[in-house]
Image (cartoon, rainbow, N blue to C red; front, side, top):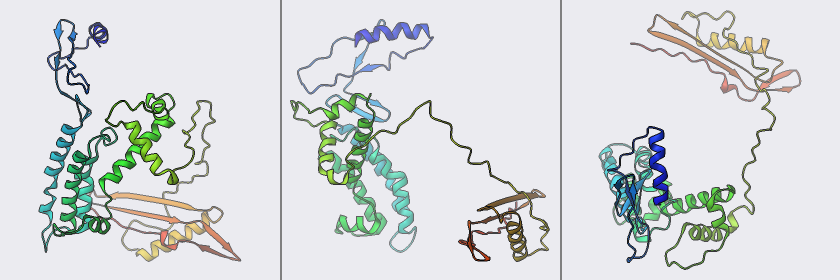
Length: 323
């Protein structure tokens, strides 16, 4: 580590990069209580040793218990649980709105970086589960004695434990597909089992073995080559039409008339093509704007008649914006 620091200091001077040496600290990650950190210096400044570090909003403690990170995540999520103010017993937002608020503002704090702290103790992870249980009671308006599984079934919100397992398996699959990644070899090799504490590789292999029947037999990384042929031009037959004959911008024509004129133009100009699309907009007096869009779906030949599979795709809309 000291050799790396000795290379960083001259590199920063050559590239005119100023390192805040007062905020630069070090942490010794070890399970041994007898291990003592050595002396590290950045230039002439000795570095301070701390028990934890925060990187990309994930807190790493020196024994990798993830307790401090989970406590921080729990605190942030509970502060976001003020969604209870949005609804009461007989008033306020409905279940759908409360569910969207929880999934958008509360649950991201409970799951951030879950694949990295998958080895945390179950007691620490249960602290996050309690936050979701409280949110389920707010969403459903249920009592404290209501079974959690029933609330999960009613709201359609899966347990956090299942989502964490899913993210761990997805991350492990990404490592296996990336052959030059250091974790790719660790996931393939058997662990020595010297440590009592679990690891990401052990957790991932246990989950893959548990869900072996549901997973594909072989996962291959997507192929990519710089010599691949360019993508074909799929817009060669694109035709843009910005006007409809006999269609005026005045309000004297009804929507039925506008629709009939548009359909007649589509039938006349695009009867040989599979589909046609027209979009037209024109501002007026900076106070209102009219926009009309017309689309015809793929025609199907049936004798001498031309049938359209989706007549509802033909739309004529008028938008007015008032200041």
